Length: 337
Ligand code: AHG
Ligand code: MN
Ligand code: MN
Ligand code: MN
Image 1 (cartoon, rainbow, N blue to C red):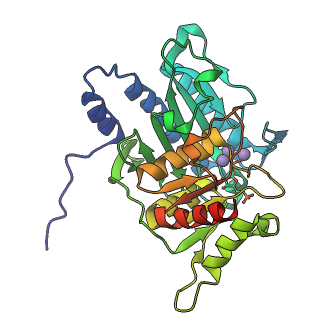
Image 2: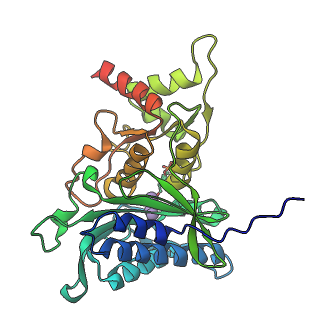
């Protein structure tokens, strides 16, 4: 019987990031230290999510509502504080934007660094009481040359981000991250507290067979949207309909789309003229990852990463996933414009 080979040379996220840093002689190591702080935040949130029901961490946080109108769950608030503390103490951050804070956080001078982190500390939190996968989504900008770190350093197109990623908290904690050279996936080994490389160089299939959208909003969709999803459900003779999968946690729906292909969408509609998802800390990081994995992400009329947010909690419509699937919806929008 063949001996189970013991791996004695594990590739951790920290090691992978250091390898990246070594490729840039001028690198200061600041981004490596910042990503260590992000990892700490994700590990800490992962333990709280896993113990949520045991520690009575589920449910609403005293009826609070955040600036985008979401009811704040206890875990939303705790996860938010975990990341703010981890990022501030890294000494590498100048500006933070969180879904759970109305205003941008400008870090005090003595702790200020040269990066800006925009994050959704707990995505899919409405599902947390049902035990459905949730996650943290983050994007990182480097402050502009000559900037001391202000809100103008984050009101920029998503294409200027240097890092984007998410950590999905499910049966294990999966970190999916890009520093601009492709997408890698890591799984948290709780025994050693490290994210281990398990999904190197993720590439999204050119076309998929799954669509992921909240059909409960179909009554409010615009014509291109209605035409597109009907084309998937009622294809011409000889072609099979797509399957429908919608979890309602963006992290989980995007994770499946990256691995299996197809399309995830949160369109604009008559109820929400810019859709529901927030540009900075949901659409940009997921669009960045999708493009780095060989897919596409559009608002319907333009590339998501070319949007310039006017306010830190702006929303935008999003269609992301396999290149050919996104091309199809883009063609229909062009036909109707
Ligand atoms: P969050 O929990 O961070 O507020 O995000 C929830 C978002 C996103 O996770 C998901 O794709 C979307 O809400 C689902 O919205 P609907 O329930 O309207 O479909
Ligand atoms: Mn929310
Ligand atoms: Mn979210
Ligand atoms: Mn959230």
